[in-house]
Length: 334
Image (tube, rainbow, N blue to C red; front, side, top):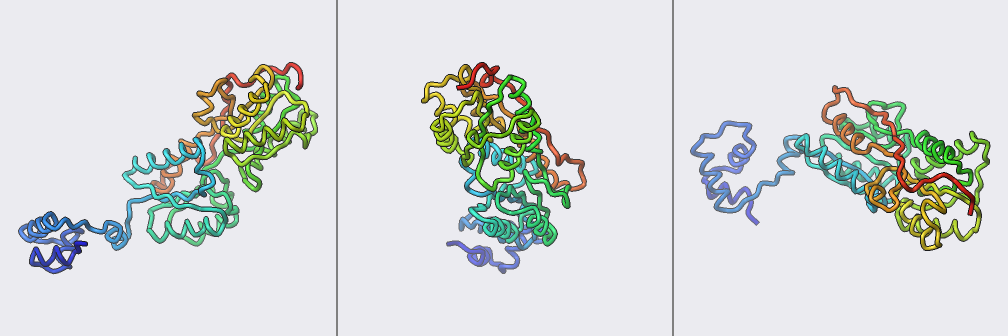
């Protein structure tokens, strides 16, 4: 492997002179610089950009921590896309670190990005609590923004939506269509987003004078396949319902397949709705009624908070009901 010493020998200068020429911070005579760059071309030497950036305390990179359990699905693929393009708009490179399967592993991923000297770090946490996130922010000088979690102590370092209120908005729409037996496919146990959406489901039912039926509550794990299996479990209970609300669009697509395999037509026999406004729901047949979560705007604001801390940015975002073909007025329960 060609080293900086090989370049220095060929150019007839010291390693320090080669380094100064590459960094451009100290004057190097033009004829010497020309010899150095000719030597680089002749040897094929490639400077270690990371080492140079670490020495300069600047990496031109933005870090993102997200657990690998969330990679699998259109919504999170879109989120990572927006993180990459938003970073690129500031001429920064996105560095992705895997938070894996525990709070400690999320901490490890954050520490990896800190060791790489990212200019700022975005965290999409699954396991770390609000108190733990507050502690991490308090003990680091590197700018950190938390996505999809409200931090009352660090309001300027988080972007979030009110998932419970969004679910209540969706439930108000379903109840207005005459649905009273509404099944709910929840997300992974312990997920703050999932628990907030389930809380909104229960609150909306009770507000309408309907006590939530445990037989209408099944759990998935955010993926299409888990929605399919959850719906099969629900159908096997043979309890009446006219509508199924899934805690995200990916699971809703799995629910749709299970219903159709059971001979149920959407929305004639059963209505179906989800959350997130994933692109897959827009093109599914029937197109999926959902809550639009402005993840693209949230990510842009998160990157802006990291790189332009003095600029005005929005941290509390609003979801929006998107009515499509998969929900119809209730007729009779199964």
